[in-house]
Structure formats: C-alpha cells, structure tokens
Length: 230
Image (cartoon, rainbow, N blue to C red; front, side, top):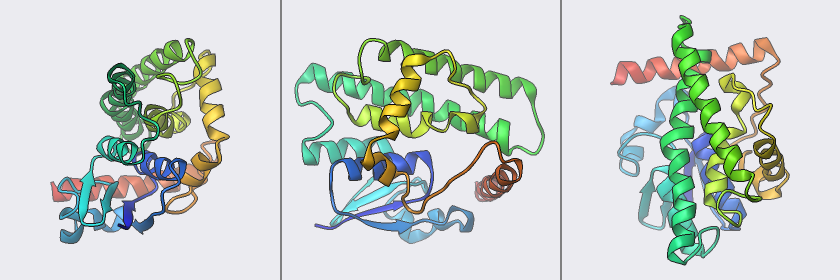
C-alpha cells in the first residue's frame, strides 16, 4: 500500500515526516497550502475531519492527528515504540506531554508574540513563561538519560519538532543544558534533517527582522482566514 502524507511546513507536519524518514518508509507527499485554505477543501476534510495538517493515508486507511499518526507508524514498523506495557506507557506519556503541553503552549506563544497585530504583554508573558516551565520539565527528564523515555522514540521526535523552534516563540533554552544537548543531538540525525525539509526547506532566521516580519504576516493571514471560516 502507498503511504501519502498531507502536510505543510509546520512542527506538527514535521513530526510525521521525520518519523517516516527515521522508519525508512517510502511515502508520497501532498503539500497543503494553508494560506489558500486547502486544509478546508472537501477532499482533505474527507481524510482529516478537523481540517488541520498533517494527515496520512496508508492505502485506503486515513489517519489524522499527528500523535495518532506517530503511534500508527510505530506500530506498523515496530520501531520507536516499545512493545512491553511499561516501556510503551513511558513513551506515550511523553508523547502526550507534547500533544497537551508543548505544542499548545508554544502555539499560543507564537500567536501572541509573533502574529497578533496588537501586543498583549500579559498574554505573551503567560505563554512564554509556561513554555519555559515545560522546557524545564523536559530538561529534568533528560538529566536522567540520553532521550526522554529510554531509547530514541516517537516521544523524542514529537517534542523535538516543536522545541527546536523555541526562538520563534521568544523562549530561550539557556540554563537548560540537558535540553540543549538533546536538541543538538537530534538535529544531527540525517533522518531528522530530511524530515524538516518536507514539503520544502524553510530557513527562517529569527535574527533577520524583515524575514521574520514576512513570515509572521503570512501566518497572520492564515489566522485571519481561520477566523472568517469559524
């Protein structure tokens, strides 16, 4: 069966493309243009009822929600998710930590710090502070071992694809040595490098004010599109 990944250049999209590369699974890519609202097209909604990327089809079987996709692929290949009950639970706990904490909080930090036309200092401080707290939780766990839950797993893939973008959220990782070591180690993995170039390479320099402004303007347009459709 042919695996097809429907994705865009977002941390959640990267989670699946990095996993596919790590698992050495052949797959096809369909780029979803978020700026054009392609995620709301009926054909895509038939695969992903929530109208968000990523989504994946394995033959005629469709999966949406990036965490669910990671678990499906891990179970399909027998890679990056232990089969014993406790080992599996440890990985899933840290996967859920990303799904329920790191992703939503970094996403909100991005919105208030980068995308909203008006700056709301209390909201920015609230979300950046929570992201930093979550980073400290990761740092504490990584002080115990090389990866989050024993061997390299889908939990590391999921968290790394978000944490690597910390500067875009306006959050520093200084003072979190175990987290910084882990970020750098995964960044050196060839499969991770290939995965974050899907569907196309994006090199956003946060120290380039004009480039950052253009990217933020584009993202702001997508947020406004979502508001109008809500």
